[in-house]
Image (tube, rainbow, N blue to C red; front, side, top):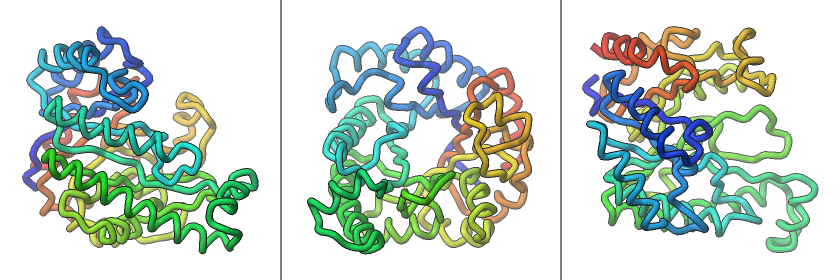
Length: 308
């Protein structure tokens, strides 16, 4: 594998709009020997009411320019283009995320795959707009609308020289939430419908491992099937236990959930994974729980050895 470089993601809650915290945390990433840092849009306080604030942008750029790093951009975690109540606001924030990425030279945007919350309360709103129908029929309509919206946003990003990677995600409870984001192959089918060269997949290996065990699909085959569409890679470790005790320090002793551990700390067979994706040439972005920052440097060194 010959990746463009290695990155580490920031933690939006720990930065929380504090420029001193942003500077400190980027310093940890740079000192670890990274080429990239993945910024989280809602931790920067640059997008306000769906628009990029120029004065705030300038202050953030001054911080970013202090480091020999290049940047990628993760959109807000809750941004969901299928949301009936907030979908238009989310669309505007997605557009602003493209503008912000262009302004700081980030050529890759990560978007969590969309989902519809078909709860009893929400169904009344959906039925008022689309008519009463079975959940599966309604979700099919919402999928087509999501394709249309992502195609529009993809064209805007294309003009700015930016690629969008739709990420496979995890779900602990699927009783009321309908999504194409659970299986990587379904994400790729969505990408095919969008039909743009700059809209591909962010393959999250940790998410894939968790959901393959919980929902009974083949981990290796999923990765092999989607590899031609992968534009960005999220790498972190866990133990494949899709359970959630609601806080990190409660999950960690039992190995529960999406722990975002350094590679080698969990049970994902990464030596095999990197053989399966040997043709990948994008960024390898480490999504490590930021409380583990004292281990960033060794995590990057271990990753370089593994890639070699």
